[in-house]
Every structure is written in structure tokens, then in C-alpha cells.
Length: 97
Image (cartoon, rainbow, N blue to C red):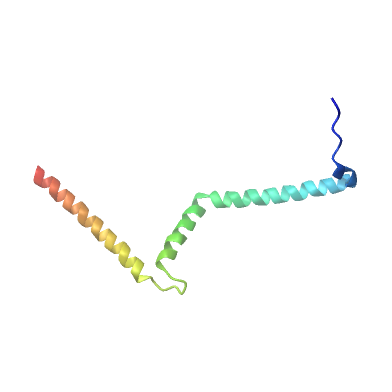
């Protein structure tokens, strides 16, 4: 079996000094630590809840800070409908008994 020739691009790369390698490793560590910090922040339960609340709040408030009455009316109508349905089901069960 013939040995594979080393890649041609390797011979063109100048060898790095130990200090350059140390500097590269240190910058990689810093980037990795920053990435881990960002991920930890993103998956923290309080951050997730705040982000979801902000998303919900954005549904009911426009860019100017004014309430979006059409969205509020839709949700209020759905809530009233749900309560009416619960009352109707409860009354129907009582009539059976």
C-alpha cells in the first residue's frame, strides 16, 4: 500500500511559534466563554419568561405605545365566550342530576 502524500497546502503554511499558538488558544477560550455566557443567559428561566411576556405585550401594544383595541376586544370576546361555555356546561350537568 502506498503512503498518501501530505496535502499540498501544508508546505505553504509557515510554522507558528509557541506564543502564537498560546494567543490563539487564549482567544478561543475567551470566545467560548462568551458563547457559554450568552447561552446560559438565553436558557435561564427568568429570561425566557421575560422574553415571552415581551412577546405577548407586543401583541397588545403598537410601536407608539398605544393599546391595540382590536386585539384586546378579540381576547376579551374569547374569554367571555369561554366563561359562557363553562356556565352552560355546568348548568347542563346540574339538569341531568
